[in-house]
Amino acid sequence: MTLTEQDIRQWDQALQQATPRKLLEEAFSRFDNIAISFSGAEDVVLIDLAVRLRPDVRVFTLDTGRLHAETYRFLDQVRERYKVDIEVMFPQAEAVQKLVTEKGLFSFYRDTHHECCGIRKVEPLKRKLATLDAWITGQRKDQSPTRTDIPLVQLDTGLAAPGRQLVKFNPLANWSSGRVWDYIRGNELPYNSLHERGFVSIGCEPCTRPVLPNQHEREGRWWWEEATQKECGLHAVNIHD
Image (cartoon, rainbow, N blue to C red; front, side, top):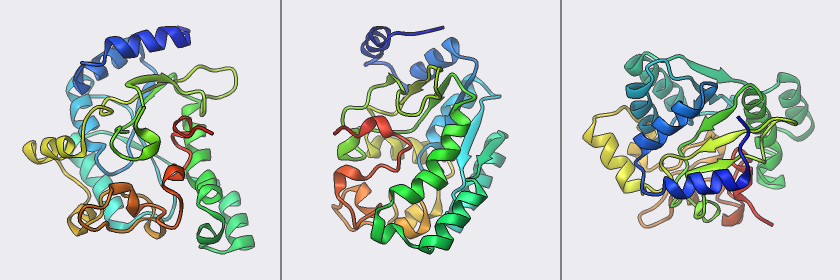
């Protein structure tokens, strides 16, 4: 099934009032070869909704080799709670070894985070997405300046493999952080224990820190860089020149 940009725009507009559950229903009805990208933070909401619709939903996550111990424990909690297999994608060892040998373990503080993220996150993600027709993310419009315009459905032209079409669903795009956490608490979902220590947006350990009251959640990510560049490449279509 090949969709045009116009098809996607019309579909996105038709779904603007849809709940995340309804959007997931649409996604699963249109695509069999689809998976949820689980970052180990609030994406547990997606899994909680998805398993009610498709108990055998496919889920994958990226292990950069630099995650917090709490994140690894959380992944196992989700596995056990929902009885889902979480496929873990790892970076290419040779590329990591070359980067660390040539530039050390903390080159991102000098050279920006993009090279490290490209090796540890983007390449493994592209490798996984090359096997899929569609993927589901937990992006929200209120997360950062680069995400204010994200649609519910889009063509992922930034990460699609050559010659393949890739559709991306963002079921939580119109939800606020408060609404996500109301759902988590109201349904007693598991969550990363780092949230109890002031971490809001959680990524790799060297590039994530707690935020202070009234700080935006993405201020805890790559805090040494410009706010409009705080994407690691997983959502490359969000960044416009």
